[in-house]
Structures are given as C-alpha cells and as structure tokens.
Image (cartoon, rainbow, N blue to C red; front, top):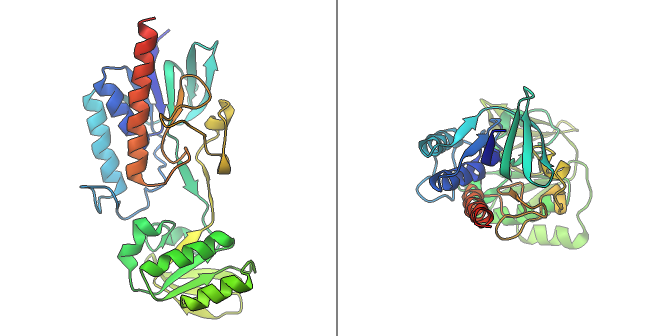
Length: 300
C-alpha cells in the first residue's frame, strides 16, 4: 500500500499553507485541488500583508509553485469520498475512483456563498456584489451602496457599512423582519430601507446599475453587499463524523484538530473569521500540529 504522511483536500490558502509547512517538514504530502475556491471571482485580495490587490488566481498560482518546491504532489481532481480505515489510516478516492491512503488527513474544503436568487446576481458576483465589507467596501467608499438581506443579518450588515458610506439602502426583498426599534435605528443612521420584493439587478458590463423592484421602480446603486448565507463546499466533514457547529462548520480545537483522531480542518470550513489571511494561518497551524502528532507516533 502506497501510504502518504498527509493528504490535504482543498487547494485554497488553508490547504496550500498546510502543504508548505508539511513539505518543509520533509513529509510526503498529497494535495487535491478542485479549483472552485470561494474567492476566485474577486478582483483582488485585501487585508493580507504584502498581497493587497493580488488576484486570488495569481495568489494560488504562486502558492502552488512554492508547495511543489518542497515536494508536495498536487492533483487537480475532485475527491468523492474519504473515510478512516481500521482506525489506522485514511482512505480517499477521487472522481476517477482511484484510491489513496494517508496517516493523517486535513480538510480545507472551504465554503461557497448562497447568491441571492435574483436575476443578474451571478454576473455581479465578485465585481460589484460582495459579501464582506472588510474585504471590498474600501473600493466603493462614498458611493451608493445597497444591502440585500432577508434576515436580521442584513440589518447588521447595513449598519456596518456606514463606516464606508453615508448612502446605504437596505433591501429585505419582501421580508418584514424589521422591528420598530430597528427602523428607528436605521433612520438615525440615515440608512434607507425598502421591503418591496425585487425582480432584477441591472448591470452595465458586470457593474451594478439599478435594483429593480417588483412594482417596476428602479433604484440606482453602485455596489451591493449581500447577507444570504453560505454552505460547505462538500459533505466530507459530515460524512467523516466530525462534530459540527453552526451552519455545519466543523468544531475544532486551537490546533485545528477535530473529534476524529488524525483529522484536522482548517480555513473557512472551520468556525472562524473568513479572511484569506486567517485561513492561511489555520493551515499553518494544522501543518505544525500534524507534524508533531506524526513525530510522537514515530517514537512510540
């Protein structure tokens, strides 16, 4: 049996940083990358020292080159199944039904956003429609910013965005969750709110132009931030038996360990702040603790 020290599922910042740490630790590492990272549509990364405005694709290209330098094997394949065999090692199968084995397993499979089910949303995503104000609000500061939120999270997002603009409009798309106290607070902060259902996000070359209401009224807007939830990229975390928390995210220790011995989860699929720099740091932590666990087992 061909046995890797570690298999990493996920070729984003968390998985690649874990791979580099383990490669530099002279471990035999196999990384799977399906190429569907959450932020690939973004026009540039932010809040990452020395990497401001770098496009995610370019960032990942550099990271993969660095990982390969340390002997990491990268396969651009989808993993269909993973399980722990006889409590001794993990078995992973790809979409071609090829089987791989490893002593340890790191899941860095990430998340995907649930886009608003409104005509035009997909075209805007990553260009003038965003989910994270800390990542993208600077670029649209002082412009007409819209917020799409069908739950109380939209209300909170609208309040946050007042740091970047004095022209904020919250759209609840037919949902009437705003209480009297919420409305008073929005008015106090000069945030307009519209509860009428929406039919379309009009764009010009991928940039938001108007938000169209069901009654035909058009509201001019330069950018849209949405709070519509997210979901895990794959169900491996659950199928492996990880203890799950809110939104089906894995519960981990500070060392990224799960309740399954030898299984670690890093990045957005673990419960923490969804920044690229945080995901990278979690990957580094997972790599260090996996190497330590392997070393302890090797001297027993």
